[in-house]
Length: 246
Image 1 (cartoon, rainbow, N blue to C red):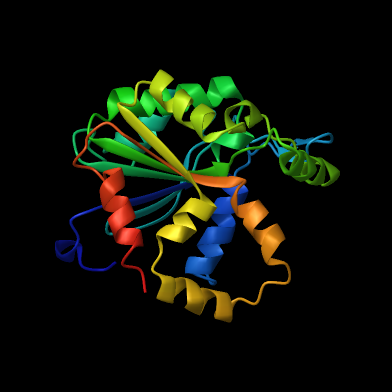
Image 2 (tube, helix red, strand yellow):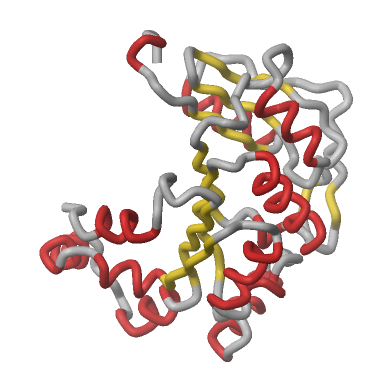
């Protein structure tokens, strides 16, 4: 991360403030945690969700082309663009550059309105982008109902569940938001794309107590790839890459 000349890409990580502090400690245990006098740590007693919607933007860590920032994705698209693209207060990312957005169980914790605003804003403003998304799926069946009850037992609500009924509903929201192509796979389908030798190695490294339950769980999480530009991480290339993992 010290020599910019060796990089042809930027890494930009966005988390809410208190998660950013955890990531900062991982990167540098001696660093001082981010402090914000205006930080609103109001906790919703029904959901145990910390209200970070009105937090100020902060640079938490930056070196070369790596940026770690605190930001709540429920804020406006313009605020997000300022974070990503501003050369004064943001990361200086160009909208015209090939861009890959990664989200791991993010949209399901947002309201449908907020997540739609987010993915539509990214589609409109980044014409050469792909969005790789990991989240729950098939949540309307009996196993999905058990998962939802387990989340709620831990006071964890999932406002974005409406898009998690099936792969079709996951794909549909990206099409509605303006993405040209969207394709999803359950984790079981992804797992079967791996070479048999890799699956054998993984299964012997990670001893599974109940393979049937594990496979059921894998059927209830998915990876989805949405694209605006076929050059940027096309789904066939993704499958080819999975097939070569060792």
